[in-house]
Length: 300
Image (cartoon, rainbow, N blue to C red):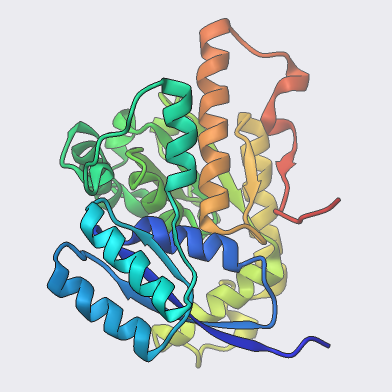
C-alpha cells in the first residue's frame, strides 16, 4: 500500500483565486493517499504583497500554481521559485498560447477580466435575486419569468442547484412536491422547461434525519413521522416520479451526483427543450422524460 504523502500547494493569484481553486480541486480529486495543505494567496498586485507570498513559500516550500498578469511580479515569483528549487507554473499559459495560435492575435494583459461588472455580471445578480424570491414554491406567479423550474420532494437538492444555476445567470424557480398537495396551476402549462429531481429513499432519509437534528426535532418518534418513515418516503418519491412522467418532465436522480453535475444536466435539458420547441414536437423515443437520468456512477 502506498504511503500517504503530504505536500504544500501554493495558489497565487492577482484576482479572487477562483480559477486556481477550481483547477486544484479538479486535479487533486484524481489522487489518493495525498494530503495537500493549501496556501491561498489572492489579490496579489504589488511587490510588497508578493514578498509576503515568497516568504510563505520559503517557510513552507511546495509547488506553486499562479495566475499573474503583471510581468515583473511573474518574473520575481518564477525567479525565486527556481532559486528555492520549487516547481512553479502559470496555469493559463498553455491555453492562452493555444488560443493565440488559433486566433492569430495576442491576448490582452488584463487582470481579472472574468470578474468585470458587465452585463453578464448583472445578469447573475438578477438571477440570484430571482432564486431568493422564488425558492421552495414562493412567488409562484413569478414562474412566468423563470428560465427553468425544478420540482421534487423535500430535501432533494432543489435549492442549492437553483443557486448554482443563478451563478451561471439562470433564473431558476423550484417547487416542492408535497404529498396530498397539488402543484401550482402555473405548472399546468409551464412557460419554461420543468425538471424533476429525485433521490434514493435511504439517502433522502439520512438527509432528512440530519435536517431534523439541526432544527432540534430529533426527538420526534420515527414510527409516527412520515417525513422520515421509510415506507412513507418511498411512496412519496414514487408518487413524485409518476407525476413527472405523467406530465412529460425529465427526471434527474441526484443520489450520487454533485450539485455541479446536476446543474450541468439541467442545462443540457434546457437546451434540448428549446431545440424541440424550435423544430416542433419531438418523437416519443427522443423524449428525455421517458426515463430517469442516471445517478452519476462512473461505469465503464
